[in-house]
Length: 430
Image (tube, rainbow, N blue to C red; front, side):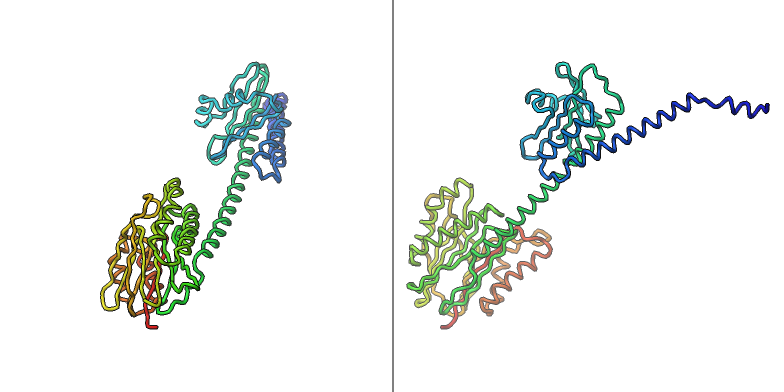
């Protein structure tokens, strides 16, 4: 017989080949089992968009897939109480369950990226596996076995695959819920924005001898600035007010609505006779609420009498207020009282001006003077006074928008950091 053929025949080892084939078959079976298991886990939570439902169905499915005495699953969502499920129900007491899944040593082990941790409870072993949810180990899967039961490598690999997939399923649900919550908040903010816009004057009142323009631009969707007019057919007086609530966003908007309502009520009761009394009464009504919320409001209240052309006003810590007489220069009128909510008694007193044709009176908020450009420079009082003086020939309906646009151009690409409100009054011949 040919020697080379003889050596080839000798090299054939049926037993070894059988072992190789059995090993390959076992690996294929394991792979198939993992794929089937993952499919069943995915189907278990299909159509579920609540974390509680996903957890409950996941533990029930995992119990059918692995030869464990019980399955434990717990997650700690942000700013919420932990959610924990086990099957069979009440297999472990709650305090024991928490010790098993969240004991400090185990959390350190899981956080360090280890495959898992085995812990003992009475006659049981618990294989604890971290679930990656949003990059944290705050979700945990526990598989409970009898102590004498030997965990084989295929079972452990299957458990790990299930844990990874279950973590992904839970994360998807959490992301979906976060998306829903964001959409709900966006809808609520849009509604709040629309409500706040309706609270602002939709048109300016026709007042003999006076041009009027006003606008309010919140830095965000809603803000704490406001302006308003209050008129009464029986008393030919234009009452107006401008205010700025401390803080920003929704909390400032809520306080703004409350403050505006009380000020309007006090103006109606005073019938435009004394802005000082309006501020005193409003401060008394609002003081406790402002104190509780740690907030305050700067407020300017004015009353213009068309027949005498007299403007009476009181200022509770509000700025900027600008007066530009027709034959003079623009100057800042400083407030003489503290904002509402600071002291129990406001220190503001009534002041007055006689407006001649061509005089300009403006009340704004610090969203104008404190606006910053990309270099960190502020628009400032001096620039505002100079800009108003240069545009004094314009009617109020042009001067106001031009000043707001100048502030916007000054900011450039830098976003507004504060709400901006401006009310412009210009005396004209009747």
